[in-house]
Image 1 (cartoon, rainbow, N blue to C red):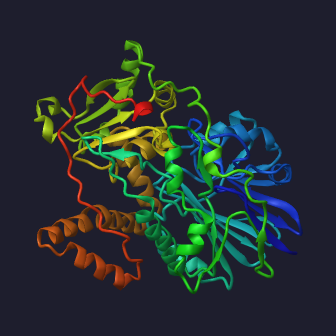
Image 2 (cartoon, rainbow, N blue to C red):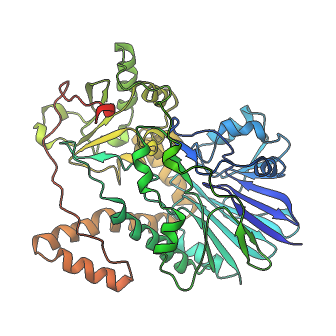
Image 3 (cartoon, rainbow, N blue to C red):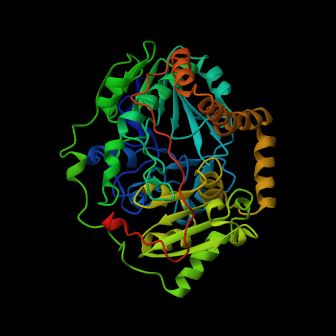
Length: 491
């Protein structure tokens, strides 16, 4: 039997056996995502949509709308075997049942045979994401999509080592998260694209080398920003040309997106024609249902404040959450006594967001959709979105329904029991990234050694040289309630 696969944009992977479609992952087939902010870079052809519809096996990784896209369900047969990870919360499973599917929850870290010479192994993780290992005809496809390893690095490295031929399909992007970030004085915090792209590509290359895979396939990153208020982020997209220009590995073969790969011969050929128009010509004329000038009613403000106030897990780390809608700003203090704290010392974030998208988010609970859409502007006061706000609000709150300290303890105990080693290793990784390394940076700056040590570390680990030194950005004064006025449509 001859096995092959195609990457068809974003995280969609189509597996074939003797030319017959067998398995499709994260089928985003048509239409936008993230409140109209994302569109597929290359619209799928009727043949490609038909292959997805003809696949007897379908796998969804997680609930983000570019992976779990309800508008695409109309094309998928209800007779297909739909598989989902064993996530902490089973909302994906319930949603599929409501749409007429009969989903199967894959057991965690156990092989499941789907057909002769075809089996899959799925790992769900604390990020409310999942990774799928596919063994097809003796070849391993590791579909990491946009998931972190969450402490399972060594497991996957050992798994890859069992195969003579292996492929990694994973995100390579520096835009697929909130990058529309500002300090308290509304000075943009993100550096220019060419400052961010080399390190991102290098990081993916190093991951592929660490795992020991033979080939990396561009995947999970092929989208364009189509709203006029998010189109600015298109310049931060890492394109195939960027990958070719920046890919550093001499041991891992690079295969471009939209490729048809024969697993018997290893040959890769284009699976789709080039896009008919460049991304900047596909930007919509309007912001859809959003009007940046529209204001919230008192009843709507009450719903927003109730939403913001439910995150008990955030109280340890943050004083307030504010929203600016239609030029009006309101603040919800989430930590007791925070209102009496000197304004310049308060820790919090103000989200400049249009009315309708905010109300939809409050209704459905998925704050990550606003962050990833990158039309909302996030103003930070003495804080960063990681490691606390985004994981606690966007990941655990929206996808795991974890809001209180007791719920958080149950969530953590669940993953500790599942894999104590991965659980502890993940926390060490987070400590190194968000506590230890930043402390070393502060000390190095005080001693005047930052740039010297940074260059030395880059040489040591083989990272690309920085394009320019990043200017140290200071955090300005605290938010002034009811007085901060900013309309994104006017800049």
